[in-house]
Image (cartoon, rainbow, N blue to C red; front, side):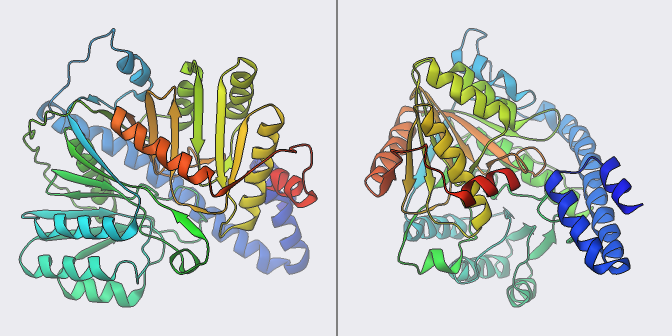
Amino acid sequence: MVSVMIIFERDKPRNMIVWSIIFLFTSIIGYIVYISFRIAYFKNKQALLIKQQEDIIYKNLINDKLSKEQASEYDELYLFNKLGYNARLTEHNLIDVYNDLGKFTSAFIKEINQASKYILFELTSVNVKQFEEIKLALISKAKAGVMVKILHDFHISFKLIKQLKRAGIKIYKFSRHNTCSHMYQNMRNIISIDGKVCFCADLDLKKNQLKGKYEVSNMFLKFKGDIAQDINLAIHQDIIFASKKYIVYQTKENDNLQSQSKVQYVTNEYSNDLELVIIKAICLAKKSIQLQLEEFIPTESIMSLLRFAIHSNIEVRLMVPLKTNKHSKYFASRAYAKELALYGANVYLYDGYIRYNAIIIDDNYALCGSYTINREYINTCVQNIFVIEDVKFINTINKMFTSAVENSYRISNAKYMLLREKFFKNFV
């Protein structure tokens, strides 16, 4: 009966095998565990479906208040971003990139100290030691009367939560069903300060990444300008979902920045599909495609398009890390990378950790954000992509890639693939 249930649910072969083994050795106990997991899974899925409908209503209520950019239909970036559906194109933005964790922390705390109304966090999780200086700054502002709200998804230290709540900081959990693995989780990692300055930063560094002998390649983004309204709106929507309390959204006046950096904030909500955004980017490439990724477990569509791009004499450069905390995904990622090298791509294995994702198309457009090219999570977890057209920003990403190549191993013999790589490629 249980086997029939698993088959008719059309679950992944990996899950079917794992659950069958569990049932074989645990009998009734395994069946109870399975039911509890599936209930949590469907509750999480249903909750996010309701959230999408509520977000559409909320966004329509304040849609008239948001300033609209009048992009020409002949604007190449506008044509590129048409796949973003509800996401608007903003033209006056200022982008700062931080590669060093210490410099980012200093700049971030400086902006926190200048906050006058509110500070909103939307994080997957945090590293307690890395968050120590930021915690002290937040507690100071909360005691000064600034509203501070933190939305998290994965586990955060109970001691840290207790200290923050004691200072008057409100903390919410995005997903209430902890038994639902990483499916339908929040991985946005965005921060808004007074709705004027926003960050995209992953503050969940592991212990071996903070104090390890291997290098860690980081990228933290800071945004000012029109795009801050879109990021701020997304955080408001998610806090409403988690707190079950309506928040009156107040738009901010533009800073009239002279910078002409064009940015679009795309999420995988409403009718948006982040996989389609990446596919569109690959299809529009004419000269080169550069990928620097935390992991590379692509769908068949993305993989076949990259192979087609290589056969069309488009230069494809891919960099994935040699070090990771999840060995199964590491070997699967390396197997796909070697397969791409077999077709003629320039593939590099970075001798360290990569803590961000960046795709550059023809040195004209960059796709950065919290998304991950992992076939399991790309359209089920709550993620985002920043589509950016800014020469200075793209030059910075290219310098990071060139610098990382010096600390990387070039895959020269892609025909040789370890047995465990083949296994995890099929398993993951």
